Length: 161
Image (cartoon, rainbow, N blue to C red; front, top):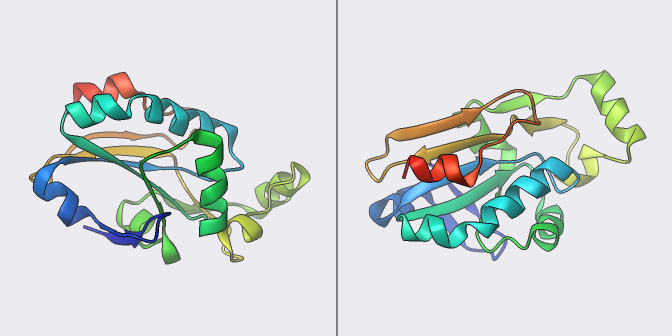
């Protein structure tokens, strides 16, 4: 179970969601990641399908609120996006990892500075992952792949709702 603040300043608690709905939990790396933006946009396109299936979508990122706003602008996300302060949620789900120094330098060559996006020097990111959690709190579906190019899709998520 977790609680965190969304882009609208609202405290989101997984326990509150699970009282009435299933939970689709998506971890993404950041607004600087084109694959993340494409994935989040794809999920936004199916938001009504998720609602009809009795589920609520929540995205989680290490990004600070100003970076989350950039994600929303790029993806048109209407669902809650949570800033995972101190990576508490990412750690609970086992998706957190520290970017190796060589990759930090490579990212900077591409104009990606996690210190700016995440508001700290930790260089921590999540493995892009999706969890579908039933109202009973039991995980019904997991898509987890260290290859950041592999993501869940709405059709697969809907099969598990």
